[in-house]
Image 1 (tube, one colour):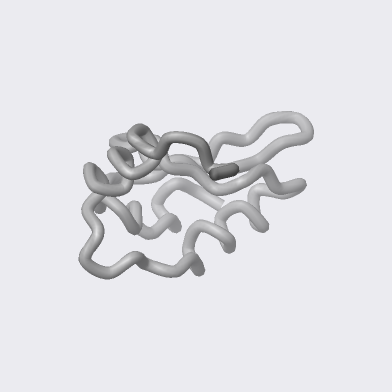
Image 2: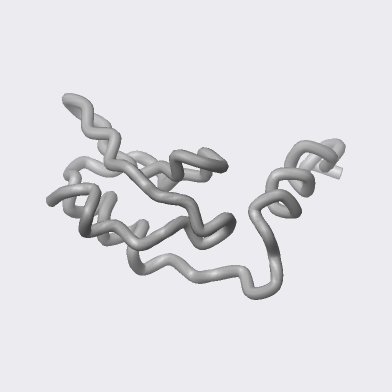
Length: 75
């Protein structure tokens, strides 16, 4: 699998890249740095990235601000 097989970021539309390591593979956006969780294989990480749900009407900036400004998720 190559980076060419990845869909754009669902939040900002930026390009994504595969981050493959020995026992941890994921896909991350180069622009806003959103990412999948770790997968055992590159194929699983790419599948998770390409088949995720889009948040309609939410921009990458709004997504980042939500998590940066969110106080305590246990509240």
